[in-house]
Image (cartoon, rainbow, N blue to C red; front, top):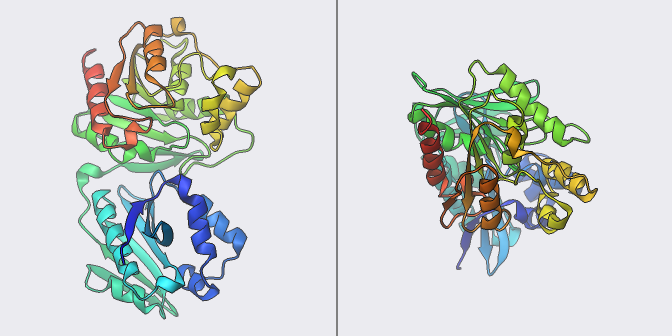
Length: 383
């Protein structure tokens, strides 16, 4: 049997739900430890955070027949994961669960998620056999077993503190004798984890502490009804007010780049900024609504899109920004294409920095370090 294994993204939610809905009641009970109806299954699938979770599918002839999901969490300085596996009834007993399990462990190690927790029913002998032979601790509570797996020791260089500040999730990375501090602002469908995973430890190793927030309704931050662009600006201002050190640099990606410009406007306190695949200072106008559609599944994007559709686009006047602004784009970005990047750069009297073979999600791609090096160069050129 020839199988393919793929890391899934948010676009796979319907396929995951279809797979889970096709499981027998007994298989669902074995997977989740309780009986789940259609609404609960849909809620579970909607709750998957594809920015930080590890979700891998097994496909046979194009059909999704199994899924492993590691929900990546953080309560101390390091991430850990909670793992669950499901396989279509017809394909059970063929070693597919083992292959999904091995794939998940490989991805977890690569992502530095070194501790995994697996909770399963005592009757689930297949899961028990998967856990044996690893660096594992077991805890029994009636019919339930908790398996704690340590894949590797946590690396102190990967430490980031996670804090909740008035409902806003913030990741803080410290650097000994820090020579500056960076505030990272994510974009649509993102959260603070996109910076926490790679960039924050990288900048800490280069002598720069940092903070990365998850805007309301994103990541671990609380959601509120009828959120507006001004609400998201308030999230940023709230985090800035609580920082013990004034940031040397504000970095924003996508819509987070637009929020960065809004924060900079009329405020001479901020000296440096980097805009990565950023919405331009003139915002998203009605004429660009073909692109706006891609934002509509996210509350931040929805707030901007509604303003644009109503003919009241948000915008920034670059003449009111005194900071040194760096403008970075991806050569393969279809959402913020190179001509928009170039126009944004002209607005700030600078030259665009293009990352070759990079798309819009460059900060979460293999090109993230290319971006980090450009941002570091921009900051150091001022010092």
